[in-house]
Length: 418
Image (cartoon, rainbow, N blue to C red; front, side):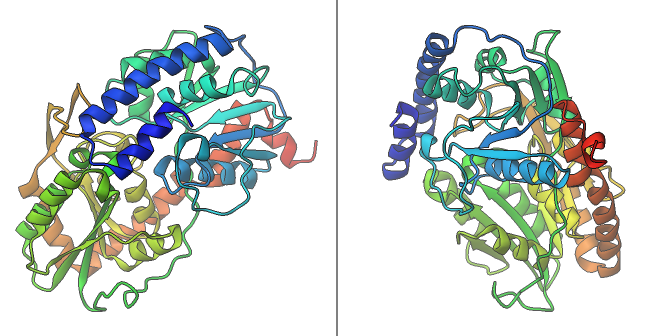
């Protein structure tokens, strides 16, 4: 078991200060950077794109946002006709493997290309643990996401082990380009989203059929302050629409009990805001989204913003902060964007320690939210427009073919049987 894996498991069992935990992880990361140098060398021999099977590396078996991104990318490649093999590294990193699917846990023997859905520090860790063999003589791509304008300095080590970097949004691509060498290609490869088949089931979630339901959802491990659930609760209550209810879906509450207690205190016992901590499968979460009328994301910053995109594809009206990665698929005509001012980052969890992010206008969010909550026709029209546009922008087949082209796999020729 690696040191980082041990720290992750220890943090689940004991109340460890999050800032201290992240400092320890960074120190461990320095050790992995040295191990990667010893086992792989400082630099790798550059590889060119070429036809052949694609290995998608990621947390395929884990219920994590980045794991969902890896699974969606694999599915998009397959939909575009590519030969794909997955490498699930969940157990290596100490993550619970909750999903079936028979994902291989060892690197494949044959693959022309490798697309790695890990953040750069974890990529260096994987190189340090696995050595050079899985990556040698393969065209390697780092598929990255980040939530601020500047990426951490520790990311530079990972640039040695990839031939290209693919970012999930223009916002992330710009951040990566600031530290990348001029000869490293940085592309924008959004998260593919297949059409949702989920049906609303309000009975299953104890929701009244005639209530206007606003949903906000986040994982504390992704950053409590960044996700800004307290801002969402305040905007909902300022909207003050009788009969409306907010669902605040929280994952990972045990990882930051003091911050979770702040949210509990903010929500109180009035009953208009319902806190949901239940672990949900992907299908259950999709059903929860399908049962909502509005999805609210008053984030301070997003690399992409998977939940708002999924909600738009499901035909829901989305209200979101008008800054960062979500602007790749939101333009204010298919969604409701909230004004903001940029402020210095202050993060009690220590996930982000420099830079700036957005402080959304809560009063304006409340006003715009109230309009949607009181006007069913407007929110249905907005949701219908959102579904059409996101289906086009994040179409899995189109994005899978785009990726195959970048990987040198010639999808057009493959589709024609050439």
